[in-house]
Length: 317
Image (tube, rainbow, N blue to C red):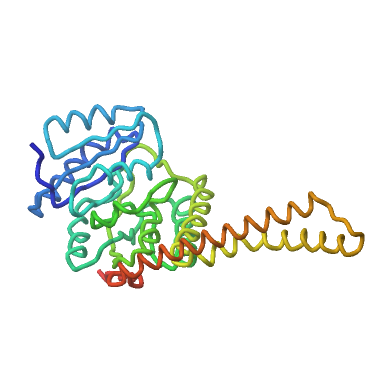
């Protein structure tokens, strides 16, 4: 018999967090007990090499509200978060870190914003308890850059404490380090986005899995996000840009062949053939752009009522 759909799913990626699991579980249960809502917890083990899985499994045997998703090896936080989202059954999904730095008590504030009509609520660690040089400064630079490139000005893209409407987040593809760019990825659907202050605690156990080595991944993913977001709304423009170099090469090759015919009465077959191949490729790209434009236009007519400009609202509290 299938259980009823819970109102809320709390998704927590875990990687070598054996000391944090029990206190985190207790804090979530305490916070949710004050709300009086049906909920489930989806803990995703990202290939931990310590006793994280065993501890979560012990708790899950006692509390049926806790579900464990286990990876065979370490795939990264985004993959773990994507798996948790896929398996979650709640109407509203909340994601958070498993290192006790996010406070489950802030879930109440996130849900209040969702009930106010927002589709996505992002936490802002306004008093962040991390190292200045290796964490805070790079994060501020990255958040500024992400806002400028994507046009979605979020103060703290790296904060895992977020709330989403389930039907929205399940349609957003996540890979690489894309969990940082969920607001930007969702912006093509025009959701109402709110940003609120949340608490942030110093790490009590273990060590951070993040560092300066992830910067290049964030920059590459940012380029992908910009391309995807721009292509989704203007496919013909992007296909035309891609075809432009092919057109130029074909023009040079065919012009050279035409000049040879006029001057010498002969032409180079390889050069002429190259020109025709590049010209055909450019025309195929343009036709693909036209098809993409028609597909987008049909979707735009169907979804015109809810496609709006993304709005970011910051709670003054």
